[in-house]
Image 1 (tube, rainbow, N blue to C red):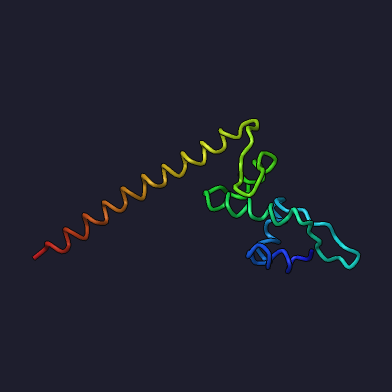
Image 2: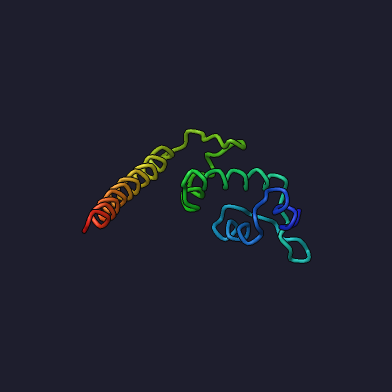
Length: 118
């Protein structure tokens, strides 16, 4: 299938599909005309990519984990260092949440102090 068909079947814009290709996450063949030609498996791959992105993983993380990914859920097979990558990403998210929580509390304090000024 051509990129437009893959886009229609997955709901992902063509420029995003090209980005996934540039990141090494999708590997289309090239037809005689030079157009990208995707197999039916590409639909599942794009679904997996989107769900892993929604989980907060980067395209670099996904590229590393892709050999461990199966199914549309997607399911992760126990591969070397898989849990290390996931735990590192989770730790980073927890740190960002902590920073945002502190910032929110500081901002609330400034608002309250400003509102209570005569």
